[in-house]
Amino acid sequence: MHDWRSAYLTQARSDFQMFRLLEREGAPLSHCLHYLQMATEKLSKGLKLKPGEAPRETVQEAFVSFLKAAQGMPSVRAVNGFDSSRRYRSFLMSLQPYAQQIQDLTPRGGEAGLRHVNPEYPWETNGIVMVPAEYPFPGYDLNRHHMARLLSFVEHCFLLA
Image (cartoon, rainbow, N blue to C red; front, side):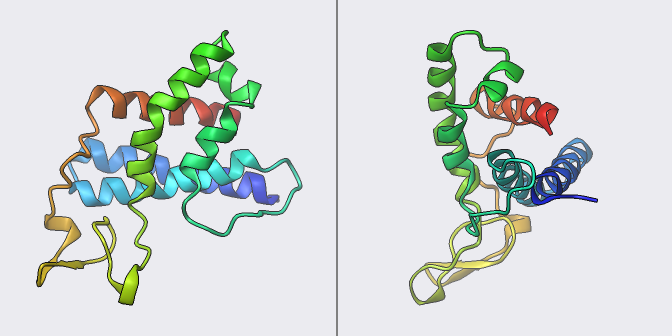
């Protein structure tokens, strides 16, 4: 039986495993990013909850706020191998732009229901309907140094789940 914290963390781990599987199999980047966004959202929500606590956030945009909250979480600092809280804060700040990139992949609607670049739903740009499975997602190279550091941070956080 799960409480909300363990439910979010269990589903986040499953989403992250699917992300890694799709990445290894060479699936379209849209599918990898979709599972990565979902995993980080649920991981963030779960780690911010205390055991037995009900969720407070209903928004999808949770990853960046988790990085900010993680500055005051000694368990997250320790599992990521940081002794110094100053170095740890600097590390988290260096991840924020990439966390924002992942968080921005949610398919939230904008003005007049317009959608933006996201890995889940088609959207329109300059009168052209774009398909996520065919879109190259420039700037989302999962092998770049900073993105690899972000993925390592996420994997380490699962050790707390």
